[in-house]
Length: 221
Image (tube, rainbow, N blue to C red; front, side):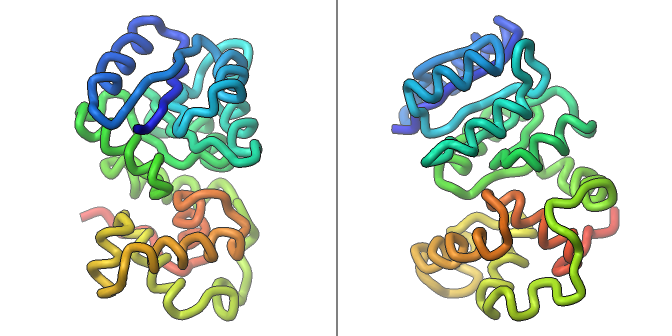
């Protein structure tokens, strides 16, 4: 059972998300919060598997709440659910360590799958916005400085392969199928890769890959 915390300053949104996610057989909403500070306090007390946060909230916004939740030991994965598809708040949340980013108007099954992916340590990024977000993020922000070496010598050949597939939006299962290896093998490689890159989530690893030109932002069709 995946235990969830939902934080949004709009009561109707909290109720809607709770109703949507709470009816799934493998999901349980253990708490809701109206602001970021309440979300962090409840998360520290209840230790949910995933915190679903809005970005713009009173008292403590989603960015600072994400930073605090991902700094816990162990960290609590954060899925950002927002109405804003491209602004500084989104980039700030990625830098703070968010494991996923999704628009609130996404199809219900997409939101459910995103929660499941974040809980499984896979992370998620709204596929309709991936190109725009990554292109803008790479241009304006830096998780780590771009180096001449890039990932040469930093990652193994297999880790580079997996990083490239992560950047394509593949799940652990899809990567395992592509490389003809066990899913546990993929998970082990990802777990070793993240600290090497100095990042805290698969999503940040993908951004790192674009920033360091390991992969390039695809051209619009």
